[in-house]
Length: 244
Image 1 (cartoon, rainbow, N blue to C red):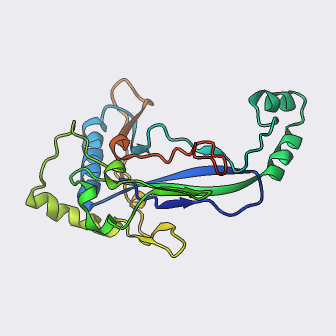
Image 2: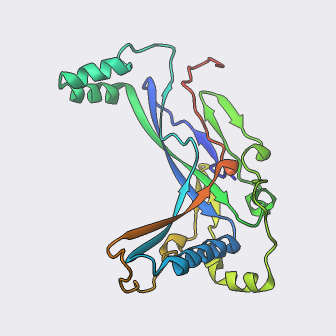
Image 3: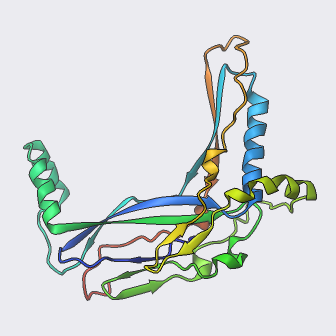
């Protein structure tokens, strides 16, 4: 589920905005953290004696995520904003002048795409996120996304209801669940300073080297796929007073 909030273009007199996007993927509930830690421990236990070194980590990503966008604010076109022009400046060792040109016509803005995922629950049904809406406001173009378009359930995964033992074991992760609020300026922030990244590492000692594969390092990754929970704010090249 996307809880990024509304992207608002800051006022500027320049012709272009260089928009950089960050990403923050967090977890809805303590059972999700419990599931991740259980998978990590299981991977470690099953593979610890096969290699001299083993590393188990989490790889979270947003499919088709783009980090940089260039937004046009006027109808005027710049002939210098072409790939071949930049390549020419680079070949002529004039890329510093090109950067100076961009600085003169562009202002910069940063915005973080925030996602909430869960292994056991439908995040859309969590009432604490009901006030979090996503969209953008650019040159009087105000777009608000529907909740069903910013999240969903992966129907290919069979979700199992937690047992009483799992619920009890997962309680220790409750303190790491993010607490998001919306500031007066519309920015969405996490007020919980206890980040789950600080504890989700295997702390056991490395096994003694054995077998014939000494010195081989094995790396295991848990993929957190946000494909069904992602709704990218794919900002096009927007011209002022142009609905396209």
